[in-house]
Image (cartoon, rainbow, N blue to C red; front, side):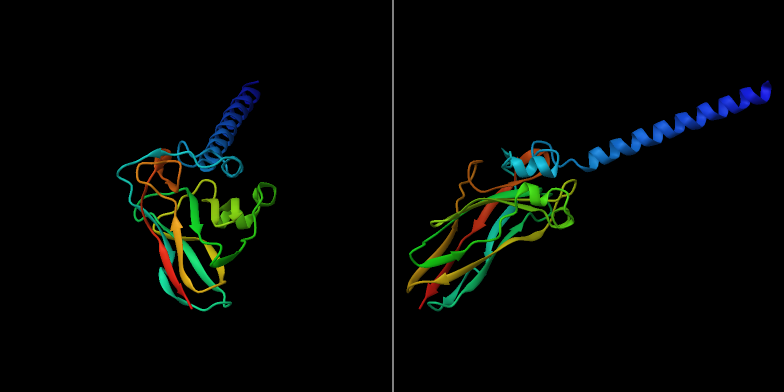
Length: 207
């Protein structure tokens, strides 16, 4: 009888430990799927909703084009990268609005990444996801999101643009950015704060 009681006791202890371990692991998985507060919880939710940010006047993130200038020839395409540098701050993604003159530059659209194509796919989990809202008529609007449960620090190339010059003149690439505004370009930092502090626009001479 005592042996049966001992077995029962051991069974209960082991069973309790297993329940605790499974519960703890599940909780950690849920936590790892979360990003900064206010930026949304899972990659799927991030893709279906634009970044939600509040102003952080101490933000240090910078959006830049690379290169920022140079001479280009009519009819010869060239690439320009959009680079996000959050320096030492965590960032979880960015809303980006870019304006250019479609009479001077023709833009080759970047391949869209739809939520149904991205969620659960390894490339999106490793590289983040791009939500394209507008990609024509002199304006580019998109969001770029860090993989679920992660964030970036320092410099990250979030897109590469390909332009073909159509006629001679000065070609500008400009970020839509106004300090202390959350309706333009913004970068989501910890607690969902907008940490974007500065943008570097580009100018090219077309010959």
